[in-house]
Every structure is written in C-alpha cells, then in structure tokens.
Amino acid sequence: MDQERPELPREEWREFFDAMTRNYEGADATVELVTKEFGDLFEAERIPLAYLEYDPKDDQFSVGMGGRDGRYPVVLRHAIDRPQRILADTVNGTIRAFDVFDAEGNQTIVTLHLAPASG
Image (cartoon, rainbow, N blue to C red):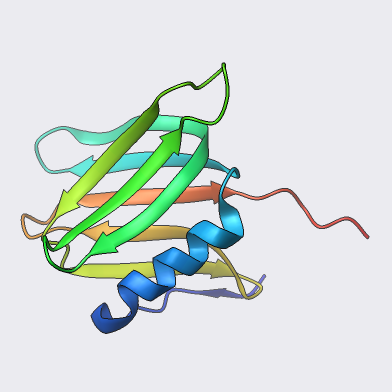
C-alpha cells in the first residue's frame, strides 16, 4: 500500500478544501482530537460530511458534519483557530485523512470513510 503525508501549502488551503467539499460532501467522516491535556478523543464518528473550509480572514479551519437528513438534522461544526500545518494522508493517491495542527500543538484528525470503488 502506497502511503504519503504531504504538507498542504497554506496558500492552497481555501481552494483545496472547497474542492474536497464538492467531491466528498455526504461521505462519512470522523473527527478525532489529540491534545496534551486530554489525550486522544473522538468528537464525532462516521457522520456525513457537510463541508471542509479554511477562512484566511479569520485564520480558521472548519469541518462541518451532519445537517443532511432526519438522522443528523443539525450541522456539527469543529473549528481550529490559527492552524499551523495541515498534512494530507493519501492511500494509493486518494486522500483519506487530514491532520491539522494548531498553534498550541494540538492535533485534529479528520478521516473520510470512503466506500471502496466497485469494479
């Protein structure tokens, strides 16, 4: 299995996450936090992705989940202020997860649970 962890250039974040939202909206996603104070915690697990976005004006990365149907009627939003680095985890050229590091050294992992390609 070919695995890479390229760092995404900051100047491409907004456009990149807009494209990811268009391509993966509705796919199940998980948000996991890794902090020095609390360790490894799941914030949301396998909830349909609503959006991924970076706002350069507020210097904030956000992931929205849910809000698509009666099962998940409300959009849950997780925001990361002043992200320092974003790494993309790819498997065989397909992005599967993002590691977002904030100014305090906390890590947020957003995993996309993509259905295997039929063939």
